[in-house]
Image 1 (cartoon, rainbow, N blue to C red):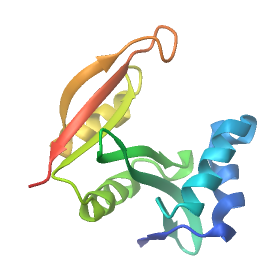
Image 2 (spheres, helix red, strand yellow; image 1 turned 60 degrees about the horizontal axis):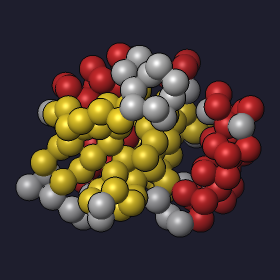
Image 3 (cartoon, rainbow, N blue to C red; image 1 turned 60 degrees about the vertical axis):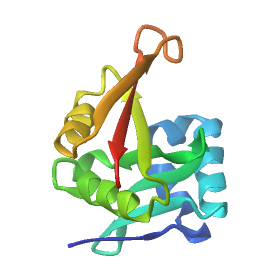
Image 4 (cartoon, one colour; image 1 turned 45 degrees about the vertical axis):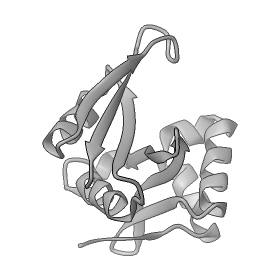
Length: 140
């Protein structure tokens, strides 16, 4: 069974070790620490183990924005990302909720489409040769 709760300081190491990018990049570790400190990070738990996390903030033109949705590779395709997404949607305080993913991230695009998000534009030049696709879900 998967449960979701707000992340706390004791989750930092678990998140940094499950996130492949955080294992090698200080910037991602700093992002995780700051998200936890600001109360915008939520963790997915399976049998008392952190298996994923999501970050919801209001940095995108004052709208809700899912800044991160990450599930450990061993727990993907089991509904964890869907539950995290639903949880973040339930917390969102604005009628518009945005997120984004790389064009190469077909799994996330599929999840967003199934969850009734619509493509809302493209941002070039963030990751060389891999545009960022912005998605929107109208919540109200």
